[in-house]
Amino acid sequence: MTRTPSSHAITLALALLLAASAAPGLAQPRTAEEERAIATAQDLSLAFAAVASEVTPSVVNISTTTVIQGGPAPFFRRFFGREFDDLLRGFDREVHSLGSGCLISAEGHAVTNSHVVANASEITLTLADDRELPGQVVGVDPATDLAVVKVDATALPYLQWGDSSQLRVGEWVLAVGSPFGLAHTVTAGIISATGRTGIGIVGYEDLIQTDAAINPGNSGGPLVNLRGELVGINTAIASQSGGSEGVGFAVPSNTARGVVRQLIQHGRVVRGWIGIIPRELTPELIRRYAPGAEAGVFVEAVYRQHPAMLGGIQPGDVVTHWAGEQVRSVAELARLVADAEIGSEVELRLVRGREQRTATVTIAQQPTPRNGRPIQGM
Image (cartoon, rainbow, N blue to C red; front, side):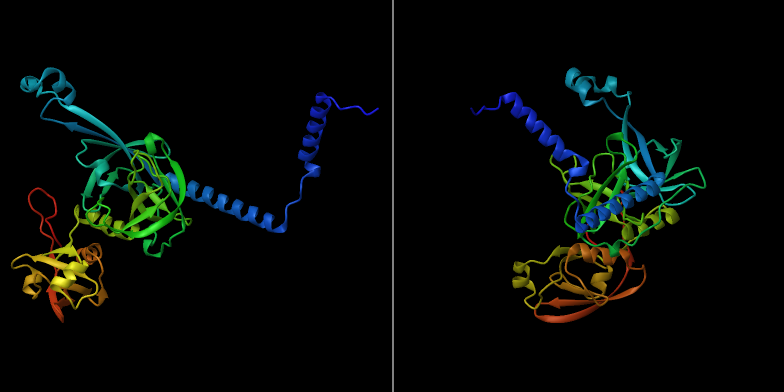
């Protein structure tokens, strides 16, 4: 007579089979290709850990206090009405915020974002060894959202500058900072794009895009390559939720290095100026004003008695080359003008209608009106 196994017996048999298949001695051996892949992954993991260990001592947490004067908080106005503004006007408000930064000299210079420290009445830098040191703003540059802060200390660890022009899309990078106040948080990702413009984040855009997680509080922290070199200063995210969605932006180190040098030497950034208001070239502008142009920057207006007008540039011209280098966007031309040496002469190639022309301009210093904001144009 044939017996049907009970459910208990079947369960026991399955358990024994699963246990046997999970036993180390019965596991399927890895192939040589799998072993190589695992070894490569372990090497990458070791590289991440080594870079993080090397970089984090140079990263600082920046906390600021800003005193808001001149009126009551909206909370009080909502309940008491504007008629009580004069009675409450004597009460100042303190606003506290957190950001990140990185040391770039043994003497205590740290670079961060200008929006982290702008208008702050008190700045405190917390070092990796938990020391809290007061910081003083050396200079800010809102056009690139960069600032330099100095602490009174010596023999500090600091990051070496890297060459951001050598970054390649797909290259691994690490972002370090204090997102949500969590000091020395390290995230990894790749370079998603370089030379991003038209984002509307800063005045002079030539940004690095990365998918390394950047969150509120990361602003001003370093973006480093796998050699531990500073290749960018994290500045903003593109997000609908307020958190990281894999689209972060950093100011390239080659831009930041020049700005930082001027801030330390002069307390401000001096930029070149030729006196034009540019516009991106479109097929309609080509059709109407410059049928002979294929690419370049459209000159919408020129300032009277400024270098462009004195050099013969007119509204409606299309700038195609700057000192022999082809230009294709407003952001590209703005960077070239800003970086040009004051007093130097630069030859531009233009298209006017269907004609090819040249113009020589003498670089002036970018004027700044009384409110401290750059005037329109370049």
